[in-house]
Image (cartoon, rainbow over all chains, first blue to last red):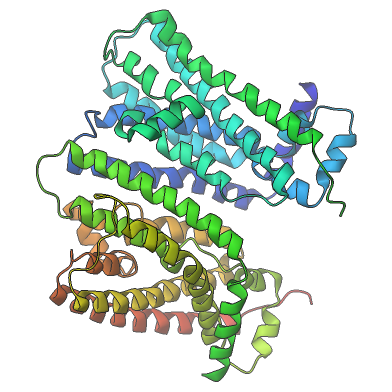
Length: 260
Length: 267
């Protein structure tokens, strides 16, 4: 843990060396999801609702997903760029060091510029919360926090899974983007608006449903839910990372250096 | 003209080499197209009135957008050009016995064309056989199709003359990331990539129609689906030509101005 903090400190300092570029990137990261959000807003102006969900309900869902995604990308960016490490055999160096591989890759990059994205999502989050009437109680507050935590773990899991495939394909696969960016885009909306097979895929294979649809229904008091079980559902997302880590370990054991 | 055509040919052949990358791109765009249509379907499902564009037309719009992503996407960047400006290798290009504007222009067209040639066919073919409302429908008549082809090609030239301005701005900022970020975020929104223009509120539409961005994406795709009638399409083509002349004139003027004060650092 101490080592990780040290990594972060160095990375932060090095990224701040290019101050202008850093600021531009942060501002850019602020605006990219803003355009998406603006178009969602405009669509609601035209249509009024989406499959029974109001604008602020979707905004809450949108912001939770984007907050989690931004945090998760900040940390696991190293896995996103992992193919580079395999192609130029930089992973060899990591393997010979007497530390955990995952820790080292986590520490290899940290995207501070994603803070722009995070700030934008937090603003939307607060805006949405002020405009929805939720009957708050302790369980619901905890559910909300668990939703974000669960989502961070799911997204990180997908990134790690994607990186693990590099062990077998060497080349980075653009296809992985379908799962990383795709699951972010899909879960911006409550899952109930999609076709059945999409719902099933994102509940049972990639468990986005447990941080998206199920807790949202509970928060908004649609249908009757047990407080305790609803509160704990988003934590299933945390479990998702376990199989991902196993795939990673399996990948490491099969790793053949490219040599160069 | 001959050297430009040669550059163009060379680039197309070069671009056609990346087949696997194109295949992955096709799969990604396919999933994306599906997702957007599904979201729009959900919006339409609970809506009883009529919108300026029907769901079937919208599906066609989205498939065309995915198929011709490489053709018209503003985000797409030719790294060679931006690097030649920041690294200083532009000095070599200036030694060449042909105008740099035309040279880059040919390079950019070829870059986009080769990317599209590989990608568009599979997407279009599969989208034709999907069930309604996901299907890509045929244009209502041959004339519409002809107008679509013309607007699409002119749209490509609009995009490239616009992106030339972004490349030229690198001379000032020296950072391709910043220029392109602003350019593409703004441009994408106003061209109807994120949100189809008929679904925007009227006040925003009025702004959008004044800008050249929509001529690249919105116009050809809506002409195809019959959402824009023939008369308006012809007016659209004229507008495209006027904008192209203006943009190229401005681009050439700025480029010569920039090149006069260009300082090549190091060697």
